[in-house]
Structure formats: C-alpha cells, structure tokens
Image (cartoon, rainbow, N blue to C red; front, side, top):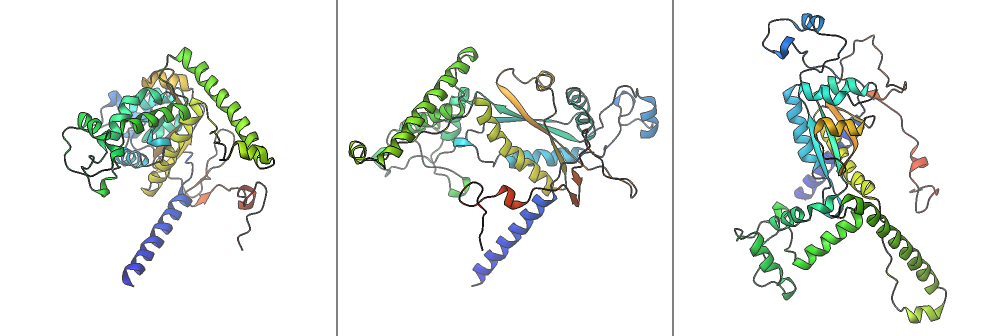
Length: 367
C-alpha cells in the first residue's frame, strides 16, 4: 500500500543519508582561519587582516577569531551526541567547547606538534572528559530518572507500590502522565533505583570513596569477581560432563561479568558520544579532527577540570577545512601520514581481514 511504500522510501533515504555522512567524514589536518585577530583584539579596527598579521608578534602564534555560526552548529552537534548510548544511561562524561581566541591559545600550549595549530586555526575544540567517578553522582542520577518517569498509576500492580511515595516525594508537582513521545519510562521503585546505582558502581568501578581507598577497593572487587567468574565457568563446563554435578546444580550456573577499570569504562562510554558528535558535524558540512596528542595534565589545568576525577581520551577540533589552491597537495601530519580530504579519503583494511563470521578467523561468507 501507499503507507508501506512511503515508509520504505523514507528508510532508503535514511540509509543513503547516513552512508553519505559516514563516508564523507575524515580527519582534517588543516583548518581555514576564519578571521585574523587585530591589534588589541579590536575587531572593529580598520586595519586590514594582512597588516595586522605583520604587526603582531610572529614568535607567539595567535589563534584565529572563531566563526560564531560554526560554534553554534558544533554546540547543536554536542546536543545530538547526548543520544549516544551509555551503560545504564549513566552518561559518564562532560564536554568543554573551547571557542574563544584566548582559551584556544591556552589550550594549544598543551597540544603536541601540529595539533596546536589545529586548535588555533579551527573555530572550536570539544574536549571530552571521561568521568572515572560517576558513582559520586548517585543523587543526581536518581533525580534524573525520577524527573523523567511517568507518575505511578492508581491501577498499577502492587510491585510498584513503593514507587508512589518515592515519586511523590521527589516530583510532587507532576500529576499528569507524559506521552510516549517524551521518551519516558515506567516508574521505578526505590529498590530498583538502588539496584541501578549499585550496578553502575560495580561496572564503572567508580565508587564514592576517598581516592586513596577507591583504587585498591575497585581493584579488589574486580579481582574477586574475576576469580569467581573463573570458578563459575569451570563449574558450568563440568556440569555438562558429569551427571552428578548436574543433579547437585540443576539450574545453570550464574556467570559473572568481566569488569573494567574506572578509566576504561568511562572512556569507552565517552567515545560513543564523541563519534556521534563527529558524524553530526560532518552532516552539517563541518570538518573535524580527533586528536590524542595532548598533555592531559596541562589541559586540565588551563580549563579548570577537577584533578583526579576526569580523564581526557581525546579532543576534537571542528571548523572549515583549509581551502587549497589547485596546485597545492594535501598535507600530512607530523609523522608524514596523509589523512585525506573531502572526496579523497584514507584507506582501510580489507573487510574480510577485520570482520569474521561466527568465530575468530573464520570468513564471513554470506552467499
């Protein structure tokens, strides 16, 4: 019918659009400077940009003045990146969007090699911070969930009875159930909320303890779970081989998860948001360059990031790619590698060297 045909057409448009965005994304090695700073940073000064560049101290590289339309577009892309999935929707990251001339110069001081030029030349740089102690945000997380709950209905099952006083105490002004389009969820009981917080602390290794206790405590928990997981796997394997064990343990042995360090868990969640940010920028015609060549301690210092809690897995510059003349060749990075440009992309390994079918090393034959 016509509705089904329209739906298929929309799906095809979505696929084509997404494929185009993914294939057009590349690591931009050089950005177009939007506007050169004038003496005393007076943008209304009548001195031409070329004369300004001559009168400034060339020994100290200066950052370009940012295009505010690009900065606003990047900010919208960061809002879209919040749709990235995270474990238990904990969202263990923060982002600092650096776009003022002075702050770009301060940030560039702690970027290695030509990364400093990219920070100064681009319109803005998103500094992604991975929260290694998201367990400290337990109260904030609980309030976030409650604020986005539908109020408990009067004819709900008795299982949710304890959700009513919790909801009423934390969101007394909400009396009308939200619609499904607001991405709401069923009301959670206080036990369910406590379980969620406990699971976040377990998986993230970000316990709300003093830092000198948190590191050995989280290591001890991961080690204990790893040992228990080993015995659980052994027992599960032996059950299938010896009947007496299957009688002693009639049900399957509960396997345990493999836990990561606090930094690993926080960074893998943060990188999902960073990838969506870069794709969103590409869809808006902005070039991006993810970079990890930074002095993280210096970056934290100049941006006022709390020490100890946040790691910096990467920073992402965004702006307009440098407009090369016809005779100019594409530039390379500090080690001589070319990352391509718009329409000329860097290569990738063959698909069958990366993607396997059903087991490691087995060709994924789908014919």
